[in-house]
Length: 332
Image (cartoon, rainbow, N blue to C red; front, side, top):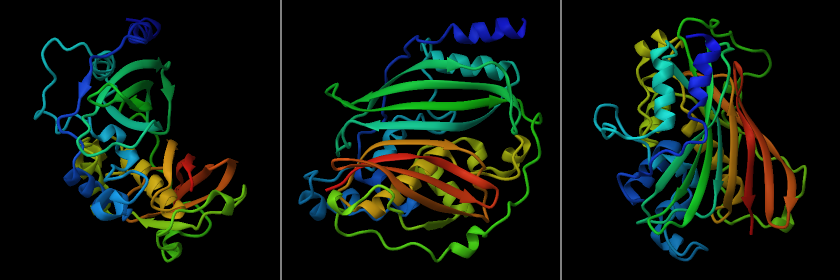
């Protein structure tokens, strides 16, 4: 099969809806607490029933960046795909695997939050393949980018969010060796920077375009990478198995994109306050977060529409920018 014919076959799946994915568990306090412990997120609306009951939510809610964690399939081999299941995205990934594009890394994630999930919500998701690229030569290897869009609802078919997700499926061993450390201030030197989370939600009339958020450095440890991957139900081996990560072309295990989303959301809500509501989170990944490094979050307010502030940010490690993006957050 020619390259063009192969891409055409992959693109035959564009626009075909997948079957409805239903979360194995309803939104629950234990999984929320596991996420918050792993991410270090101390926002009381997620874990303190008394505070949450008096908040704008009227009770415990789930961290919004958990949106797609609820329908993650679980450990491979423990939750097999039902026989005969029609899954255009899965079929696309299987075809790429068969053609030798066996390694995978997430590159972009865009969340929109219609409302926060509450205890007892049962999340449903239905995805479509939006785009499949031509073969691209990247630093990781030659491969194809696949973009999917998933709409999420609850048990009453009420919309709760949407996710656009882009991954790279690439051939291991066809990329460049990881670059060395970049110049400038070492993130390790900045570990003491930052401030405690705000206890009172920030008022919109106290915020201006151009305001700079307090910088914050997150030490990147093996424990953080593994714990957050498990908390987000992401069992890709490159996030916990060093030998397999190296075999797939990495120098070590590396942070998953759900953790990058979770830490970005935590950093913004630490600044905005406990009852600030995230409306959208859009990120793209660059240099991997490896154990032994640190990620420094920096950003500023770039737009303000009433109570809705848009924060543009970047998380830098010694190799360069790990995560870049914007967050829309509704202030008091």
